Image 1 (cartoon, one colour):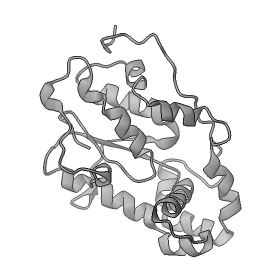
Image 2: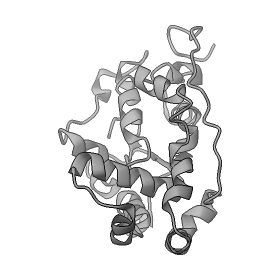
Image 3: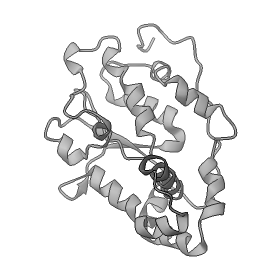
Length: 222
């Protein structure tokens, strides 16, 4: 997703849909330039998954994205596959065919001329604060982080505030992964585990979605 001030690289199953919905508010933010509309270069689902190398054809603005624990990413990818492809397949059959896709997807989406071109990366597990901090840095509009937080849709707030769904991938890890499969992720995607300090045994305390009603109306720092 491109606008004049930055590029968002949406990598599947890292909250790209939630981020995309929140960013729809960016072009309507105070002090915004009417020419900063997001470029409608593609319509539909694929617009969220345009590789940075292709987006560089339209813009040289700084790019950002989010990353996710690879162990949870595979589980989310598997569940997404079952839901959208409508093909029943056991995890034990699916995983061998898709092992290594985290690294392939990351490199495909973020690399330009063989090098990673994303300047700002935050964790999926800290999505609200990560996006707010990133945009407060990248945006010339001097938006407060609280103002950015107000953009998050109700669906995301409900997701954050339903204890039964929080960390469902964490619970499924122990139910799905065999020792051999765990070792495969650690071997192939180990660079990501080390870089972002992830592990199979991580337990996340997902923060509740912010409900700050005292956001300055113009969105600027006071």
